[in-house]
Image (cartoon, rainbow, N blue to C red; front, side):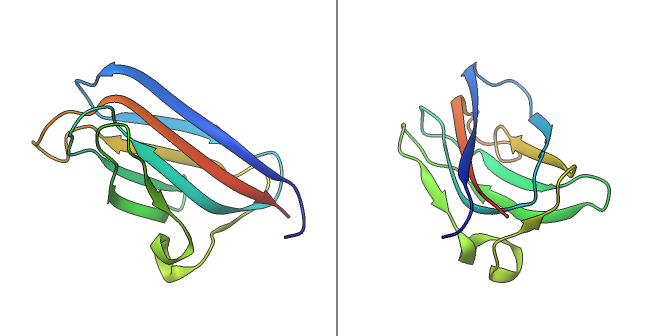
Length: 118
């Protein structure tokens, strides 16, 4: 692997009562190479990751892990079975449907996104 690997952790404590959205800008060109996500309970949370503006999706409505056991997502889970290439300055949106449209709400949501610079 060439380039630097870096992570962005997202942690939301407590039992969620609504969907959440986390938005950030990446300062360098990179690829999203891995995501892990879970809640501390048996839950129906669904994770989506994408680019704001063009509504380009990288990961869509993926079930997160239960009971502190993360589900991992990599190349074959991303849209198009490819690592998304993201240019510097891109606004990224990480969204969680906290209860998967009416199921059990997620508690203590944790998500870690891993990027490869370049």
